[in-house]
Structures are given as structure tokens and as C-alpha cells.
Figure 1 (cartoon, rainbow, N blue to C red):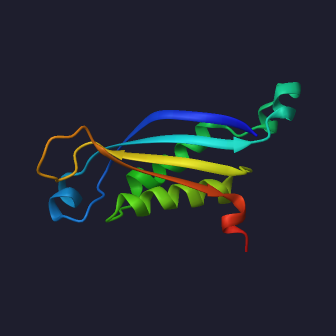
Figure 2: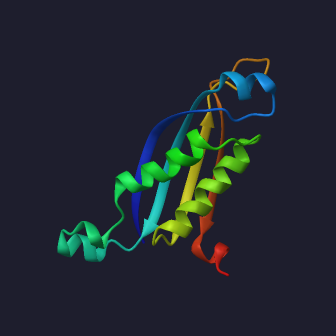
Length: 123
């Protein structure tokens, strides 16, 4: 299976359990690994045979910046679900990093990573 990677997409969102997180917001980073067959795109050199990167970015941006979730887990799951519903992807790996969660201690960040397959959402 072929892959498309998005690394370090940056969004300002208002996700978190605490009132201050909902009021002040913070930066979130999203990495994607998208699995799909790119053989036609490789042969045709035609955008219609792949996924439009700008459309992928906009999809994630809508969720990260326009919606609000208490848990980073919920945001991560919604990104995976939306991508699988909107695009012809076989599998997605989504990693959402929250660099400044309200945890008293020393660390770089916390992150949630989920892998979902198209068949996980077959109805």
C-alpha cells in the first residue's frame, strides 16, 4: 500500500476539559499517514487519480479549529473517521499532539495516535 504523509500541521483550537482551555485555546499539531493505492496517479500524473492535499488539510483544519472536544482522543478519532468517509483511503494513522496540557511537571508534550481502516467504518 502506498502512503501520503502530512507532518506537523499546526492548528489553534479550544480543546480540553478545563474552562481555561476552552477560553484561551492553544496550538495543536497533527501528523497523518494516509494509505491508498497511488499507482494510477503515478502513471497518469493527474490530480484526479489521487487525493488533493489541500482538501485533506482543510478537512483536518475544520475539525481542529471549528469544532471543540474535551478530549484529544475524541479529536483524533473524528479526524480519522472524517478522512475515511471523505476520501478513498484504505487506512489512516492520525497523531494529535497537545504541547501544553495542564499537567504539573516537565515534559515536551502529550500525543494521541490512532490507526483506523476503512472497514472499521463500513456500514
